[in-house]
Image (cartoon, rainbow over all chains, first blue to last red; front, side, top):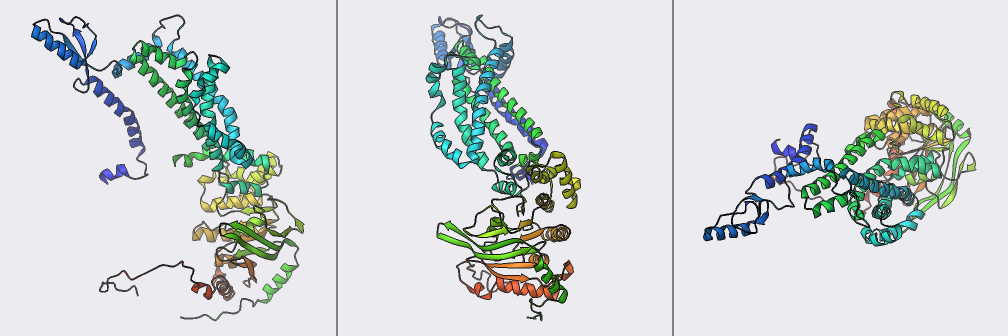
Length: 321
Length: 304
């Protein structure tokens, strides 16, 4: 046994081990981040000035490159002037974990600087709405079209060649057009998410539909199923679990289009918050906001996975595979 | 080698001859006339079936057997109209049929239960398709499930059942539609030997007690002889009827008959038809290129 057990090909480890490893998958990057942030001799390419000494342009709290600091220190020492003092520091764009954790909390409790600006949770809510409508509208047309294209060759040939072409057109490229047609508010953003999702969605779902075991359709036919009942009683229930999995993956893709979409027209939502904070060099807030997106994404997915297990009890065995 | 003295498979005892005479008096359920099927393949057109003719009488059990590539699966798929014949006719109760339908129930080798439906809902499927209401369909389905002895598993999903149980559900599902004929395409091919034997006797029991005509495809000679009234032997390239054998083993059948003289005589005949000695010699390039790979002075020099 020994080590080989941990590297058994396609064999599951014990549940407890799997849980521990899952937690470790989060802790490992956090550990690397902490090491870089808290151990002074790892990286730390800059120096935070604590006492400017005789150097005229140094100010306490200022971040300078280490070479610059060393040069000024040497110059001051040779001149016999007051030496500047400082501690090793990381660049401003890499805040330490505790700073981000703090920002995570204060971002929600800090009032926006200007009346016209939004609280963080308001920005988030705006983003979620844009995602929801973009994904909902895409699914409203994409899912039925995908299923039809996967079921009927007529629908497949009539739609898929064009969609294959269109999906290579980058969604953000339609930004200016979307704004010109739909104005500067939410509509063009929703349109970008729609364009980014819809075409992939049709193809993915058509493919999933085609993977349905044709023997099930034959069996249904010998049991008297015809046309519409084949579609509604066999095709759709037959693919629903895989369709649901596809939708979860597609929802993840929709999130990646969100950031681009929100930069179009008047920037809005979480992206507005991020760009705004980056402008003020509040990188702890930037990281907090980015992580927020990750947390929302992961939570939604876990929730949907749990919901899926409740809704489709017959796939318990298949889900493990 | 020691050879058994076997009677001719054509020799029938009086009760058996009597029974076949009565069987042929029964109304014809399925009549196949001049059925042919050609495929387009990359090597040009291939004749899968040529001029198939036979009749099946009511409540008869017919097995179809033949070497691989004889088109027995194509035949049963054409009978279910999952494929269309190139020419020829098939009549069900003297009438032409169009498209697959519940009057020809089908059981596939791969079970093909709907994984998203419970056992009960699977059996109800055909009944609901026929427009039966939920209540009556459920009641009827439960009777069929009871008949195949799976009442306890009515609420289970297919993935929770063993292969034999799945196939019993598939049989119940097909029978629930009360088809005129039950088409079975190597239904027990994927089962282990013991389950297979058990399923065979279950099927015999069902057949004896229900008004059903069965057309059963298999490549297992014992299975064919054990189950069938008559065996339709096909030959390959192209698929043609070679012989329609009346099985001389008396009914009702039991496992004890597997070594009876009639049984072995029939098996001998089938062996001759399906594995003719000439065909064995035929060099089609499909053989091993074996050389001796054991050292000459090895401790175990020979397996003999």
